[in-house]
Amino acid sequence: MDIKQLREKAMRLPLSPGVYIMKNKDGEIIYIGKAKALKNRVSQYFGSDRNHQEKVKRMVSNVWDFDYILCTSEFEALVLECSLIKQHKPKYNILLKDDKGYSYIRVSADQWRKLSFVMQKSDDGAEYLGPYMSAWYAKNAVDEAQKIFMLPSCNKVFPRDCKKGRPCLNYYIKQCCAPCSGKVSLKDYSERVNAAVDFLKKGDSDSIKLMTEKMNAAAENLDFELAAKLRDRINAVKKITEKQKVVAASVEEQDVISLMTEGADACFAVLRFNGGRLYDKEDFVIKDLGENADLSAARAEFLMQYYSIWKNIPPIITLDGVPEDEELILGRLSELRGKKVKFHYPQKGEQQKILEMSKQNAAEKLAQSRGHYGHELSALDELAGLLGLSKPPVFIESYDISNLMGTENVAGMVVFKNGRPYKSSYRRFRIKGFVGQDDYASMHEVLTRRFEEYFKNKDSGDGFGQLPDLILLDGGKGQVAAVRSVLEHFGLDIPLFGMVKDSKHRTRAITDEGHEISITSKRQAFTLVSKLQDEVHRFAIGYHRQARSKKAFSSSLTEIDGIGEERAKALLSYFKTITRIKEADIEELLQVKGMNRPAAESVYNHYRKNG
Image 1 (cartoon, helix red, strand yellow):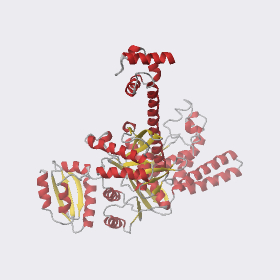
Image 2: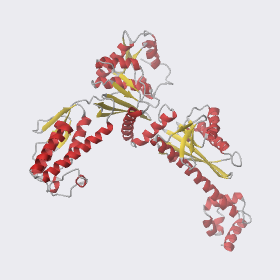
Image 3: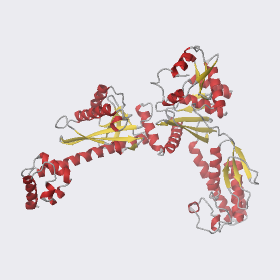
Image 4: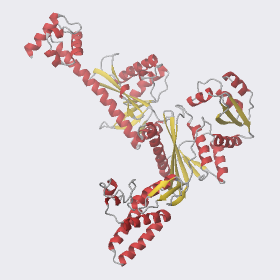
């Protein structure tokens, strides 16, 4: 069917709750959704696509037909939607890979046993500890055991690879006993492996108790060397467990879920707590969610699909934003759990800090998937929260004015993309509308010229043809007011703020026309804004010094008979420096546009007489 036929079919649907099933030309299910009123929801797909996200546009372009199932309530439609999505895994729904299989810790069967993390058991004679439901926990447990008991994590085979090279860095930082050196006996190595297996099987408290008993017995038998080794292992276990307490929470059992976006991509991070301690972490990168995706709808879809895969639903789910259909989803999760589930949206305190940790994990994972750094994305997210932006700003433009007592009045524009300087989009402006010092009028002129260029080049989508997500001016309320009128004149709705400095010329706050927003308590946002303000100041003042230098050179040239402003500029443009003009002969001087022989001889003779 074409779009017109699909819309006609949609308009015949009832105004009842239900689930709609989109299919492609081959009859494959490509999208499943729920609706409170099927007619209203489905017909939206086949009307104007002006407000559709990119993902929706692509999906609709592949729809050949659709089916629907009527339900008695919206809640019933939600349950059916989740069930069908899990069953069919449609291409255009958010897909979560069901990798919740069991994990194991493998203890190899060879003489020099080694520990490793594996996803499946094999019939190879090795000992397998587990199963563990959390792969993250099993991996961390292996890593901790190797560090505590100084066991190798490399791929060397012993005794084959003994004495074939120097020990690696882990030996020198006391994280490996280096059996590769050939100085470790099999007996000592086996004792370490046995102790590590006890630690993995019995946990830290029982392991410490057992090793303490062995240490005391060794001391009584005057085996002080063994007692010292056991003492060091006990201290290592205590050190590891103390680190784990850093992520302990006052809430006994909860999941902490956050969402980070960058461009069209997104990442959900899930931190799972039990007994007040973090025991599992997962990241889900979702490609092509859409530049203007509805984040509340994305949260709702993620929650329902995640907990249809992971059945262990906690009593509290901490979120960084409200999901669409909040009450419906809470009802469904409570039904699945068999007990009441609550959503929590912390604004301060310990829980808010844990939520920030989750957001940093999401930022790092998303940044890695896109080839840059998570701290930059975290800083942008923190800045968006401070300024009340709906999402982190990808493109930030910043402006600064520079002059000396009203002379050589210039401006600099710098652009940060994804939290980094984007130097190909930097621009310089020479103030043309007036003479003298007026920073407000200068800022007004610069932004007017910038957005005039936007309307000339907007079809290109590059350079001036792209609008920023945020404008930050070097200055206070006056500069913001001067530029606000420019945005209103062009009908542009772009977040606009000024960057305020303290008496020592350091970034102190961000301001709009009404009040100041302190950023000193938000470390990552503070660092980003300070870096941006320093960069735009450097760029503007650098251009001002260059302009002053050229004027000084130009003034020295106009002292020569026959050389006016135009010829002076032409000479500097051609030769670049006064030194090269001094060294030029008459024929070279004649190559400059506007120069005649008397003028060239005048310049040549001037520098020969005064050189």
